[in-house]
Length: 120
Image (cartoon, rainbow, N blue to C red; front, side, top):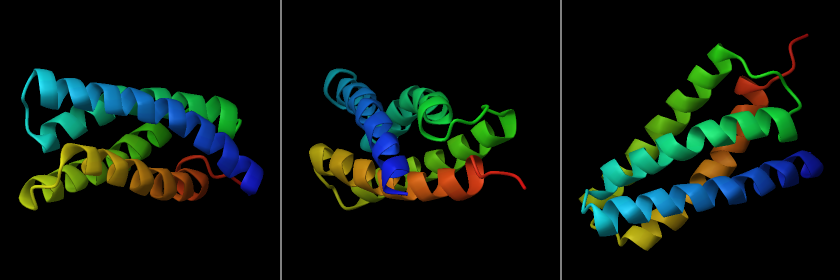
């Protein structure tokens, strides 16, 4: 399980860089609210994450159903974190760190047990 998580973490680092970059552009260049910026950043990075984790982490063939499950779950998580950040007026950098940690842990277990689970 540790080896699998370390692969997921490696993909997650790249995914996080993509996410943070798009989030920063949204907030600091286009002046959109955090919920919108976080969702756009998520949308940009989630496809990379899904396909990279399918290939590298779980050695699984990507499926439309799995993609839909992954995108839906992570999108709801992204929107929730952004909405809470806006409501509590949390600094954007804190929102990024919180979402990155929450999505790493929740995303790993959700991916392992739901999206890429081995069918018997």
